[in-house]
Each structure stands twice: as structure tokens, then as C-alpha cells.
Image 1 (cartoon, rainbow, N blue to C red):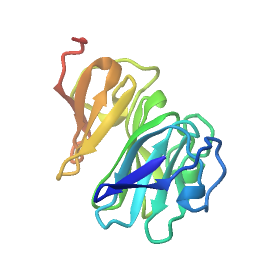
Image 2: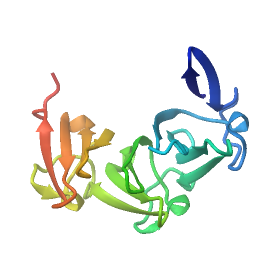
Image 3: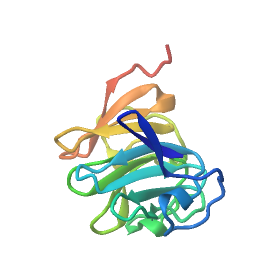
Length: 193
């Protein structure tokens, strides 16, 4: 369940006692959830976005209507193509989500070893940081589309539109710079400890 607490009172926004996907277009309290790993609310208080790694979807809850709908994910685990609509784009463990102030939702497509961006305006998905080949590490100061990651997890953005993310099994916190598309390490040596 996804819940909110107001003045000490907790209520459910989304979720039932069931975990099997039962479709879109239902009120939040009639919508089944799997494993929700991340939530993010827009600055206007209109929508709550959340990632569900069990059903391989990123969805939104409307505060005005109470209805849940899918924005990203075809429902099958896989690697989605570039510049396709969100609901046509396969994902694989969308672990964490973040939204900026200009209508983009960023998410870690964890098992695909990518950071991707969904436009609320166009509904299209593109990759901004990706692994070429399998998971691994190939140093810093490389463009996001040439970098190699290993299970990216949490991510956030700064006021300049840069994305900071954890490169989980490379044991690093890294930054993608919007203006240059370059990825650098900001914390971590590459060794756990």
C-alpha cells in the first residue's frame, strides 16, 4: 500500500490486500500493488508517481480523481526501445524515480543498467545513461550513452537539471551533467567499505 499521514491520521491512497495486477483506471483503493520501491509527488500536488518492480511499471495516482494509470512499462520485464511511448516501453526493475520541474520523470532501469527519462509532455522514453554491453565499469568523464553501469539504484536531481545517482555495484555516487552529457564520480572509490 501507499499511505499518507495527515495530523497523525494514516489513510491509504493506493493498494489493497492483493498483489496481482488488476489493470488501470481504478480508484487507488481498488488498485492492487506489487512491490513499490519509490514514490515522487509533483510540485503542484496533482499526481503521485510510483514504481512497482513486481509488475514492471511506473504508475501515477491522480489526487483530483483518485484514479491510477500506467505511464511507463509494458508489463513484461525487458529492455525497451528508444523514443517509444512509455506504455510501450519494457523496463526491468524500475527501482527509483525522480521528477524535475519541467515535466520529466527520470528512473533507474536497474537490471538494464540504465538511467532513462520519460517526458510527461511527449510521453516518450529515452536513455540518458546506459551500459554498453553487460554491467561493469569504464571510468569517468565519458558521455552518458557510452558509460558502463552496474545496477544503478537511487537517483535525484539538482536545480541545474543534473542527475545524481548511485552506481550500486560499482560502489560509487555519480553525476550526469545535463549541459555536457558527461558522467563523473562524486563519491566512492569503487570498493565497498
